[in-house]
Image 1 (spheres, rainbow over the protein chains, first blue to last red):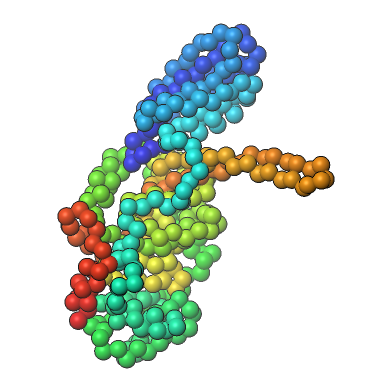
Image 2 (tube, chains in turn purple, brown):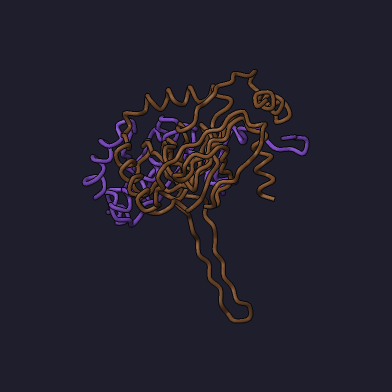
Length: 119
Length: 236
């Protein structure tokens, strides 16, 4: 997730509940793997947030003002790390089916062929 | 018909430098196609000059080893962010840039999606997920099939040994979900499966192996009709 060298994920909100059982994984994640994740990504602002009585989720805020929410209820800490890494790796663009796999501004270097071109 | 096309393309281009096997230099030898056949003699006086070089053939297995070591050596971390920004700034100013077809075979031993792309400087490519690289890594792709620029075309058989394409990994993301639905009618059989493909977006930063020209125009790229008079004038 780096458009021309600039990281796109600005902020990651880790919401969890300290009572609920679905938050067990994310509480373990916050103790075991969150500090290393924070050190690996110093440009990223990671904010833990407490929401009581609700399922835990990860919220990612991107530079194009896009928000991506991933519910991590009943997940193991390794899975949560995988999802957090995915959020960090992605651009904030909308997830739609790709039109083409090759995006270019210069489709032709030697000139596009038309019927008028004479060699 | 392929031969006729080759003749026409020869008449059109000023030069055509083609890599070939080791052969003793003959008077007028031009190898045009990608077939492993020997050269076709073209008695074409419109050619201003020609040149050729010989090199040893690289087998694909050793090539992948080379590319593996190159990739591992060349991968650099996020300290290249400033370098990337400079590259990006200079790329936008280029109107004409060398294109090339590349076989995406950087990864260790296997082809990435076994797809070929025709890229120029500054465009983006979506490939299958590359497992060994992080975001903001630089990659060097060296299975290059063809290099082209406004005045020159270099054709590899099947790859060019000294050409390289520099790319930067921009993102690893998941594609949109496709639903795979299977049904057999009247047999009570229905299955639904969701699938999201992992993709990597690469941005091409640099193409090496061909001389580049920067022609500053008024901003609009020239169309073919305008370019051809330039080229014919250069050839003659």
